[in-house]
Image 1 (cartoon, helix red, strand yellow):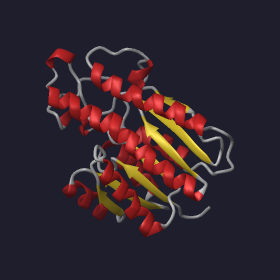
Image 2: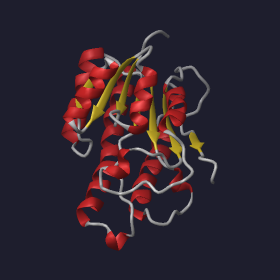
Image 3: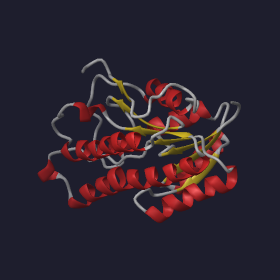
Length: 231
């Protein structure tokens, strides 16, 4: 199909950045991130478009997608990779961290899906890939809030996938195991897992789904588990 256009939400670090790096070799990419300096650095490094966007703000999400559409006219796929970490016992978590996790992981995901699907439906095709977490497949001690917010995203994917009534627009999910990214670092938590996957090992699965053609087999609602060998 030649070069296509992709939006990577949360594309300035971790898995999102790994996905953007794979896509930018042959396609047009716009990375969205909430920190201007990181967006500028990644856009400069990859030679792609960069848009500052805090996904907890619907207005910013709407404006970011409008900017990409204005620049490229169409969007072939959207990778929803943005997340906020909230690890620790519920009674030990500061209320502001709980609020931020819900704002980004739940509300932000909803806003991204809303805008993405609005544009995909307008053009009649496209792929939406949500990055969930293997932690939602079974309880994992120490991350009740993070797991709950990622479970919200999974539920949203399941409902939206069924609602499309067309294979032209696919809504899918990748659930990776623990990965050493900046999620924990940004809130001062240490990455404690000893067995894990690297973002570069999971990114090819996300890009595979993003690159599915409109006429490929019906896979909307598909969940891809990228286990780290432990579960």
